[in-house]
Image (cartoon, rainbow, N blue to C red; front, top):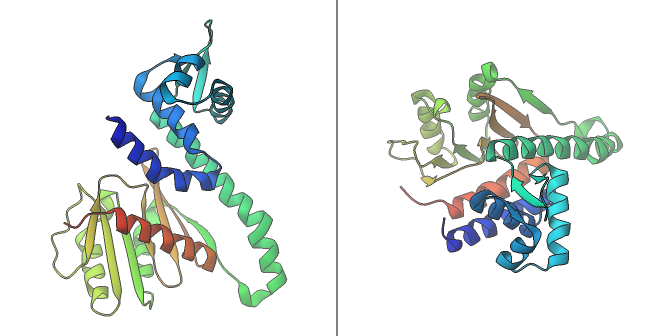
Amino acid sequence: MSQDILDELLARVSKFASVLGISRAELKVYSALLLNGQSNARKLSDELNISYTKIYSILNKLEERGWIRKLGKKPVVYEAVSLRDLWSNIKKMLEFKVDQFEKEFIEPLSSLMGSTAAYTVMMIPQHDLKRTIVNLLGEPSKKYLVAISFKELMDQELIQLIKAKSYVAEVKLIAQRDIRVEEGGIEQRHLDNMFGSGIVTSSSVLLIIKSNDRLTGIISNHRYLVDIAVVYFDHLWEQASKP
């Protein structure tokens, strides 16, 4: 991978990583270890133009996160964990952050506002995903923002539902590049790689991720989460290319 491509990738991802407290410098160091192999602090400092003092702080954070491991050599040598292990680590971090936010902010604030502010956050197992998607696309809404990265979700029923909604509401579809939707009338764009799949309406958001080859969904009608999903989808839409 060329340095220009890597810099562009880091610039695009760092704004979202910062939400989790992950700095661009940490992403840069991990990427260097993953792509270039084992290295020590001095070499990383020179190659990445990061001060020797700061590089140790970054390496310690990455080791605490479980992104890299320290090898028993002198000088100390570091290596990156696999992308599969990194992704598992990040998903656990996301789950923890969402749970923490709900317990420390959403639940207390909801209790202060009373029952009229009720909302739901529900986990959807794989066997209920199709029914949930159909129900969500059946909701009255001014817009339907759809992102599909898993081929098993994109069948003719879903395509026809999306097309039907495009006649009565704003509909945008982002599909991973290897998923072809040969259907006129649907405003769509493509991305090479996507975080997961999801659907956003005016009042609900469904996020679908894959773990251990099984799909799992999280659906909520909380206004804050819906607004975040719209902002994220709009960002992806700007990055995506037309068919």
